[in-house]
Image 1 (spheres, helix red, strand yellow):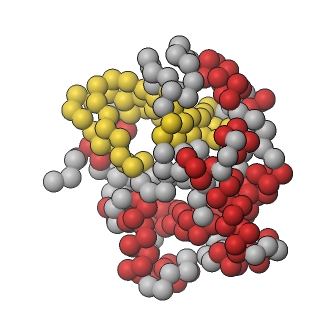
Image 2: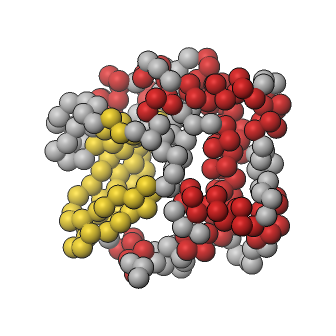
Length: 245
């Protein structure tokens, strides 16, 4: 039986979410800071959907953690009253800080990625200044390509992305492994599936077969399968979390 706290925005009664702009000197490296607070008497399984970003997070009394790009949905158990503060790093910026391919930390968590005693946003940003380095030209190139994919729903194939950039598919793949942490195909699929969530949030009835074709899928079952793999449930089940909000 599905947890009723998942449905129709009921989770919002137990959680508070805030997004904070980074300090100006971190603006080229950090997309935004975020904070989630929760209060649950009984354990709650929080579903988290992936983006092509590395995160740094810290909880009260713990050392910071580095979370590489996650290629599929994950679930975190929330219980009691607590919070987590995080920084979503901009795409392409982390290789210089890591000193190696960003793909090395994909689907990995690196514990103890900083000192004790980080208990507020100012201290967290001070820590980020010590561990983050400016991206190189290749990192900025990768970031620009990801932004192109995000903003152009007509890009549904990797070869089309490569052609638009004037590079070969293999060169594009190597660039993404080094500086993004996932393949170009994954990024294309993630942002085209984001189109599905946008359509579900808009008024009107969705023509699923037409939407699948528009997003580059052979048919509706292929679209639903990809969505379920990445988001952890079929589109209509996912939409039920937010109905009425």
